[in-house]
Amino acid sequence: MASRRSALWRQDRTAYLFLLPWLVGFFGLTLGPMIGSFYLSLTKYNLLNAPQWLGLDNYAQIFAEDELFRRSIALTFQYVLLAVPLRLFFALMVAMALNKGIRMLGIYRTVYYIPSLLGGSVAIAIVWRKMFDGDGLVNLFLKLFGVEGPSWIAHPDYVLYTIITLAVWQFGSAMVIFLAGLKQIPAELYEASEVDGAGKFRQFFRITLPLLSPVIFFNLVMSMIGSFQVFTPGYVIGDGRGGPIDSTMFYTLYLYLKGFSFFDMGYASALAWILLAIIGVFTAVMFVTSKYWVFYGDGKEGR
Image (cartoon, rainbow, N blue to C red; front, side, top):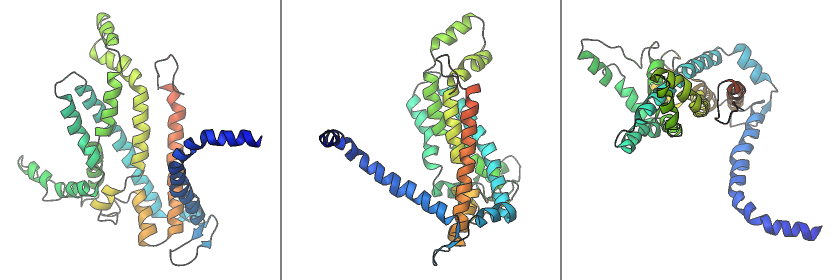
């Protein structure tokens, strides 16, 4: 038995050696901090003194007493519900336009993808802030038509939609995935449907959307998860305090302020675990409901 184990170890040790960096990263940078964060969420910890055990008090305080928690989660839900569908809609429309066999497709694809590479950076958020300021480029453009625009980032009624516009502008990543999915749809299906008299509208709903549903599902899940974690635009445009009047106080920004401005790491850890639970529930709901609308082309619906 011992000799057999030794032979198996010699056979598999190369695989274990290549897996070692991933295992170190997973246990050291992911699983370990997660366990530590969950422990801290049950304590009062200010980084300077040893954690004091509180049990579930942090969670009880969040749900029962924290008005800013309710505002930040409501604002984040509003952002997700508006930004995700709009971004996927623009991504799909541009992908369908680029799928028409136009020349210089690579250049167009690169141009539309660049905002996705730059959009999450602090620099682009600052540029966006300058563009939508009271005397920014957007209002200068509106003045050409005699329209006096407001300060889009200083008015609590407009700043959220300014940030959503920035999110929609970053549709390039989803667009590239949509474009790859569109190219996998056989052209013969469209040719046969034209012979049967189907128009473009019917082709879109009866051929394109069903066969593209796995790609839509993937983009929807990834975009939803990323949108729940929106931070940089709210931090930069809201001056790092969620202003004006908490209109940019997204959930992750509130979590950051609790942890690194008020040094309440236990409370911030509890907020982080609540966000993880929310994202987990929404993702699970999407997977469960996918069997009703995702078609994988093998005669079986979503699994």
